[in-house]
Structure formats: structure tokens, C-alpha cells
Length: 105
Image: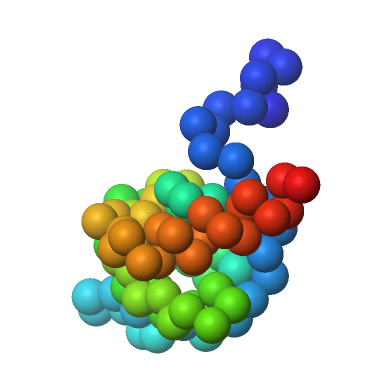
């Protein structure tokens, strides 16, 4: 939080799950999502993809297999990277939204 305000527009909740990420010219990365929102996620990883690169993510939200492109927005060396979903399909958006709403209760 900066200045007492959350900078994200969408609520982000803890949702640890396995994820595979791959991008052009970058080896595949199998790791874990730490938290998720309808706009993006934070991925735990020691080595990150470059900021601005596009990765394809594969992860499961309950019974829904999500395959989504995402842009790497920031990296925290040796900790992980924040990504923003690009063109998330409605069924994937619905699955993530249900997790976010349930965690907010």
C-alpha cells in the first residue's frame, strides 16, 4: 500500500496453486501462484520473465483449467513476478471471480 491506499483496482486474494508459464524464447517455468485477482496474479519464482514480456499461463481454479496470456508487470528478484491477464475468456473470469468473492466473505 502506498499513501494508505491500495493501488490495485481489483481485489486480490490468497489462492496458492500450481502454474506453468511459458513465453517466446524463454524456457518453461513450473511454479506456484501466490495470489490472484480478476486482473492478474503474483507468481512465486526465483527467476522471472522480463518485465513487459508475454507469458502463457496454465493453472486450475477449482474444476476449471485456465489457459491465459499475461503480461509481466513487475519482478521481485528471488521472490516472484506480478502479471496482468490479457483477454481473459469469460469462463476463466467467472471462475476467478467466484474464488475472489468467496474469500472476501
